[in-house]
Image 1 (spheres, helix red, strand yellow):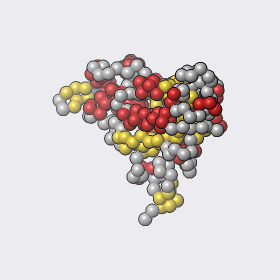
Image 2 (cartoon, one colour):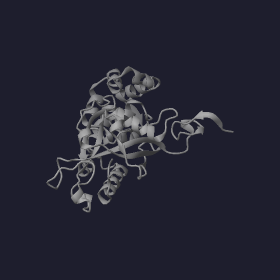
Image 3 (cartoon, rainbow, N blue to C red):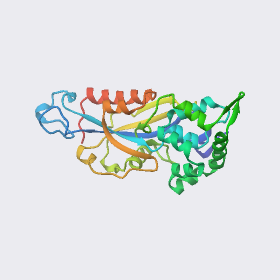
Length: 295
């Protein structure tokens, strides 16, 4: 029997809780684009519409689309490691986390102490309190790795694992992606996407122009924790002039934001994030092969 007073923040339906939900863990966000009027192939200036004498020309001849991306403050691998999302005797799983970390994060793990690392990770006390229940368990695992643990007659230490991780690709910055997040209680998909975009980028919702005749684009993938995820993005336009207004982004989760061409987006997305590359490729193809007029 279902309890219809229970609400699931994942799918937005009643009858079960988040941890009981059968669909992938879902986040909602916005892929915002602008037309860079300072970097067009024609001599005139272009804003939201097409110029009257060029209505019949393909938009791809003179539009330079750019997309707003955000860079995480910390890598997903570093966050999961600090939260203790691993078992001590699974060195392969721990190594997968370390492969995602930046050089700086690995240095911090090697030279810092847990209390400092935990505080620097969450920053804001209110955010830290959300994960308070994980702190002691995470600390115990971190200290155990520092001391060393036996796995199949072999001694593993944090330093030894970090040394091994240095033989793989070395990342100099956290992952780039698009603003997104999980829904709040009773929040619709669309409301969640707008709120997360505004919180993470600092842009106000009123400058967003939703492209109503296009269904949201999705990323569907299995994470390194073997769980299924879905990221659902609404495609929206921001005028070039509005995009130039300085913003204050959410620095507890985001370390940088920037407008990037399609080629730059693909270049800064990590190669193993194939679904993200495929998604932005589909969006770029959609924009460059169809004619849009933004009111």
